[in-house]
Length: 200
Image (cartoon, rainbow, N blue to C red; front, side, top):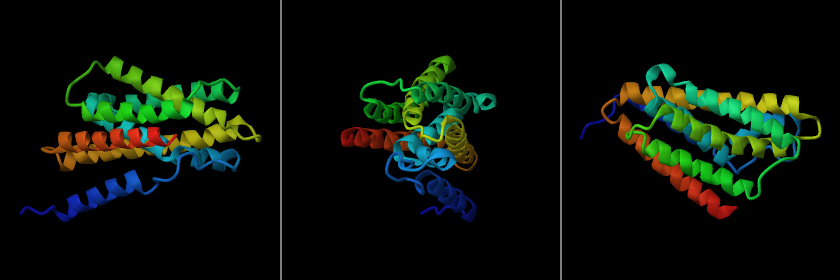
């Protein structure tokens, strides 16, 4: 049996910790306000999985020089739709749609071996991000949108950074098996999305 080297074991440990350490009940920002609420909100399981998956998908499906396009697209769409949500506009069954966005990202990641046009993939990222933004914006505390938005954007950027960094690490240290690792996480993400959908 071939064992992983200490370096690879450290990489696996960091990736696993980054992906699952913050898995908690969705929308942990409830009942708080301002910056703290914003920082906490993206660490609900649905948002966390989606944002990490975007980072992983960007590494696995986009050219290396465009690996940050996925997170950038998500952040822009998230910001715009959160502003709309903070004004009281939203969609029916939004929680279910957010859960389905997790399924979407899982499928995109699981199928990243089958190359799709970058514009189409980024369009799906923007669409899903708009759902997450509406969910964030709808829970804007009475203290106002600005500090709350700063918090959830900072947390979102950190999760995207973790996803992209994990993707690069997988590419570097597990090059021969990287595709299967991405597909495996995509399958887990999709399954988690189905479970979340069944709970809302």
